[in-house]
Length: 72
Image (cartoon, helix red, strand yellow):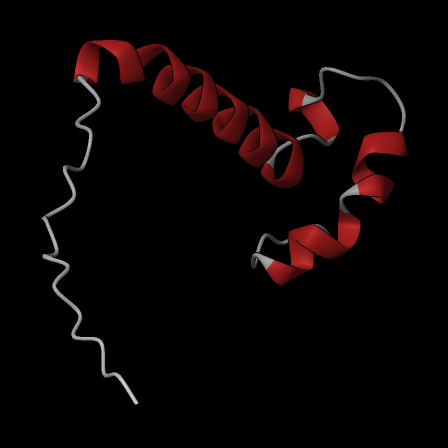
């Protein structure tokens, strides 16, 4: 029986670096979406309401309690 020896040499893998300039538009867009979500979960009711009625309040009601925002 012949035995084969492994002679492969492992080389380090280069991790690509993403420049901040290319990442910034996505980070800004994600941040704006997060601020919009926090507004709707935390403040969309009463005098500061942008959308009339209680539809948005009822839609995010459980999330409001989960995050600790008071609503009643």
